[in-house]
Length: 157
View 1 (cartoon, helix red, strand yellow):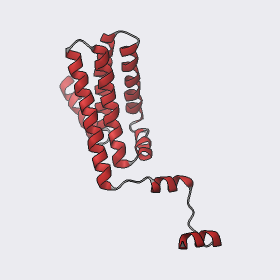
View 2: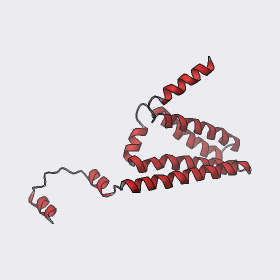
View 3: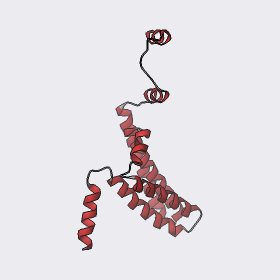
View 4: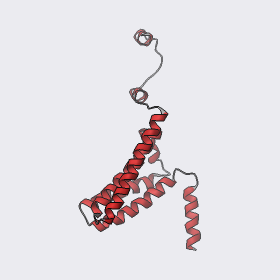
């Protein structure tokens, strides 16, 4: 009631945008965020494993779909930890922009090849998807990409 009085009398000096009100009203507690992350990540792994099992029963199209769905769900699980807007901002930072574009591109190409093109091509795109996702994930670990580059440079020379 006091808040309403302050607003109506013009004494509320707090400048609130509509976005900040939405963020505050929909914020989750830390324990809820952890639970959401664990459930979403586990579902992602389950979908990926189910897709892998479908590969062995000659269902390459379903493999690609479940594998991609699992990876998308796993990436989405991190949105519980840092929030969707912050996650999207971090995904498109200059340091991981190319990796993000490649991951999203291979998601689309995997699904297109599973539904429209050759199913064997879907398997190749799944492998490329995994490599791009690994490179994307390494961007969150300080100096991890540099270490991987140096390891490959040593192995190739």
